[in-house]
Image 1 (cartoon, rainbow, N blue to C red):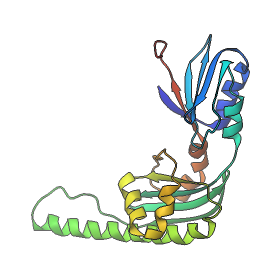
Image 2: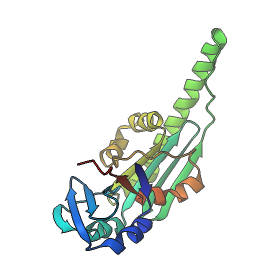
Image 3: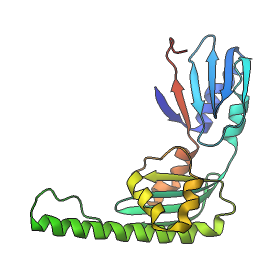
Length: 211
C-alpha cells in the first residue's frame, strides 16, 4: 500500500522507534525500515535523499533530518481552464500568479458543428497554454538562480504543452521533481495549501513475504 504522509506526521510516527531492533537500508534515494516487531516500510522523500548506509537497527534519524530541510521550489500547476505559478521558500509562498481561461468541454456529436466546436476548443486551449507559458517565464525567471527544484502538477498533457511553448522554460523540466502532483483546478487556495503535498513523503507498506 502506497500513501503520502506529511513530514511532521512521519516524524511523530518514526521517532519513537529510533534505535530499536531491526534493520535499515538507505540506497537509491529511498530508505527501507524493517523493525523486528512492526510494519516494514519503504520511504521515499519528494526531495533528494543523499544518505546511503546500512544499519543493524532502526535508524530513522538521517531520513528525518533530510525531510526537515526546507527548499526553494517553483510550482507550475496547469489544467485546461486555469493555471497557478508560484515560488516557495520552505512552506512560504513568496510570489504567485493565478490565471484562468474558459475551455469548452468535449463535443460528443458529429458533423460540421462538431468540427467548429473542436477548432474553437483547440483555440481556447492554445490561448491558455500561451498565457500560462508567458506567466511562468515572467514570474519564475527572476528567481531562477535560487530555485532548487520544480514541482509540476495538474494535467500532465497541459503541463507538457506549456513547457513546450517556450524554449526559455526548458530549465523547469530539467529541475522537475520525479513526482507529478495531482491537484484540482489551480486556484490561489490550492497553491497556498500545496506545501503539505510538496513535502509529503511517499510511504509504502511492504507485505510480510516481500524480500
